[in-house]
Image (cartoon, rainbow, N blue to C red; front, side, top):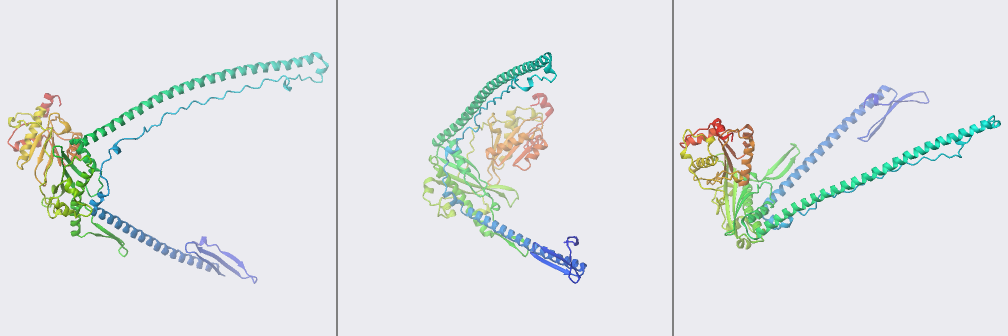
Length: 577
């Protein structure tokens, strides 16, 4: 508190002695004091000193309280993080048990749209009937206004008296006519008001009927579309019950997609069902070892003012990881059989794949680390609530390394079929090439077969296979390669673009969508022209490879074939195709 804030009071004793005093207080500390002295400056000094002491004391108290609050918040935060970490680890440990308390059957009826048409029906709001204007009061002949005003002198003259009476009569006649004119105008106005009102009512009712018709049309379209969608669901259900391949695969996809896992699990998979033998093959993407949470406890160390984390020991991390992978395999098979009320599945083959960094190369690689085949009867004999996941997996004759965290590849018991109805017979094109052939101007179907042959040569050294798809180009797939390498191999989608213009980002986006739809591990786009910067930018962080005309000629040359790419010539021949 400054000196200006110190209020000095002066008092005089009966003997004439002057005394100065002030009263100071500190609300935060709850302090109060009265200071008196005969010297005013002493009072001010003592008051100022006391106020400064209180201010310092208050600042220390506030700092202590703030530090205490901060410590308590930090301790609460540490406790909360510990609680979350423990809950998450417990959830992973109980991955298999979690599903046993849930019915995994898909409720077909819940997939249907039973919602009501969301748009309320149009309401009729008729125009407000107007209030007519009131007629003015008719002039009253008996009122004082129309009485003859006869003065003292007028009374002595009959002529002047008659004149005054006539003037009064004339005034009444004028006002009467004015009143009649005004009444006529008001009546005409009211009549027009009613006419306009009736017309407005007719327009409103007509507009309402139009809006009702449009609303009914929209409602009918909504119900029709809703009915079509629900009809499709009914058909899918009928196809599923009949054991049709596509319907069974779709149903199993819904079952596995609806299963709730910890966020460390990718929950990506590919399914293939054989209606001949009732076997469903599941290629399932498992989490990498470093994807699992390891945090056990968080403490706040007051002396260091920092959080200290305690993580699972490496041995427990490895055990948790291996146990989780066994649980996921058993859980997947259990959920599929439990949901299969149509009894379409005779057996389920689960192939678990892990994508991680290969420590030998430093690059990402995908490997099958475990595989198990289980039939309905074998799994039904087991009580999954009490089994040891690893022992149960082995009892089902599952294959996998003793240490799954080592990411040691194993051969899947059964693999997804490479049969694809889109595949067509190969055509030999590349052998007929010579240096004068312009790839940018060749027939597009021949160009696709050329790409197939080129990549067949590229993959042949590793035992790979490349197949070209039908000329309809459905799904945007021109060729599919299969790399058998157990670590880096898999399905590769290849698209061929015989372009003379720069390839934009849309073509690269289409390729990426096709890779996702096909469940492929990589996509390759080959063109006779070049790519724009936006195309390269989009592909930078995705499993996509963009090969331009120069790359294509280089690959051909590597396999002993010569050709050329002349975009200008091709534009003239193909009219810019």
